[in-house]
Length: 271
Image (cartoon, rainbow, N blue to C red; front, top):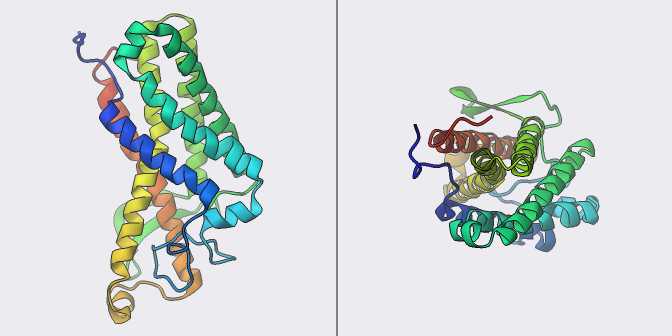
């Protein structure tokens, strides 16, 4: 029997930093990627470039995607979600102001639904930054040789797998709340929050990739190209960056899955 003190939770020590980094990245949908990051002639993995235009995919999206969708129904709800979700996991707010907890909960879940729908719209309208073949499998290579077991799906394929999971945790969170199944509601709310924070973990991964790319750019060209086998042609650089972008998402789902398993082992089985 699980101890009453060992319950699934989303620690604010994780939630607040993850929310912060997600807000920063979501803000780029309004400001664009800074010029120092998105300029011609940069080395591999220092940017995530659009194949046709050689500019960062976010800046490209600001020029081509409907802003009511990108900013109004995707980035802005993400920022509000990052504020709302940590509030839901404040224990004293749950105990002392149940009315605020409920109202904020409906807001958070509504924002989740909006993000799901807008994310699916990006997929349907081919606005995702992804390999053109959705069924392609990316692999980690060094000097042309695959390094097993590292392989992952395209960003678009990963999102098609992720979206139903995010939606199902949303649905079960609402159902258990309306049925007044307190323990089950808590479990599903934690799962839904972790599922949402997979996107923030993705942004953390992207930050590390860019930092790694910046470090690589400090090496002389002969080392980068001849010794490390890094590409020089624009098309090859973009291919690597699209693959790395997909890897950041795929392994974020893995990390979030491990996080969810750790938390769910603390409480009663979910149903």
